[in-house]
Amino acid sequence: MVIQISDDAILKFQRKVFTFYKNHKRRLPWRITKDPYKILVSELMLQQTQVNRVISYYEKWMKQWPTIKRLAVASSRDVLQAWMGLGYNSRAVRLHKAAHIIVKEFKEDVIEAMHHYEAIPGVGRYTSQAVLIFATNADLVAVDTNIRRILIHEFNLSKTISEKSLWHLAERCLPKGRSRDWHNALMDYGALHLTAQRTGIQAKTKQPRFEGSDRQLRANVIRLLLQKDRTFSQIHEPLDVDAPRLRVILDRLINEGIIQRKNNRYHIKD
Image 1 (cartoon, rainbow, N blue to C red):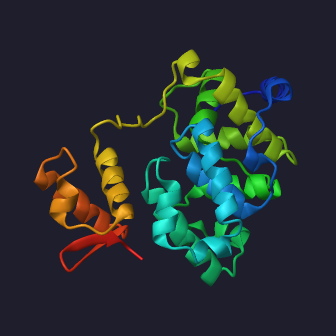
Image 2 (cartoon, rainbow, N blue to C red):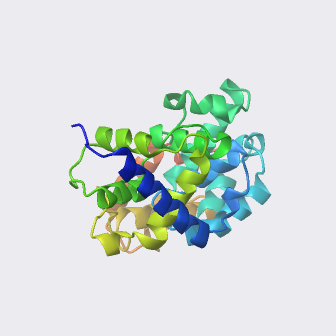
């Protein structure tokens, strides 16, 4: 599908977004660095998590592990403990694994690793390009939920437009040489002004309810095992959940490499 939008309309759009950014720019800790490792951490933390929640976790994380080499040699227990409360604990595991790979296979070169993102756990096209944009000001685009909503609203597009068409439009809208500022501006425009509530344009995938979910149960299991190793009964007793459901959760955590079972006791995998 070819989107017919004039150059003048794109220039007008750019001016609107940059004007908003000039007046409403957010001060965020990951915006004051060009360190690709720190930007990678922020991008993974920000996945499906509100900015205000991420800030304190990010700042504590950087005090504990200021470099990717430091993170790579950290224990899984410490990494999970630092992530607790941020949600989607598998992201912490993938980030830890990514650090190992980047240190070992790419000699700590995060930028080079982003060019081979298929080999990096938890990193897809969007995250890899976001790191390159914010670390190096590369003339690339990264279309997330915010930017998708902005493009659909500002150019009166169908909500069913393909990802390929949206990325192509995003490339047309990119002001060359200003990718870092442009994407920060878009993020603020979408988060503070052109919100999902205001536009009625929702994300393509809706985040499921947390209360009573498997995600909550997983988090509770990990929290218990961070305290000490436990048998199945010792895990089951404090949790209000059927035993068969708990066994499924434990098996998934084992398969994902987050926990292990040895001598009839479960523990965080080293």
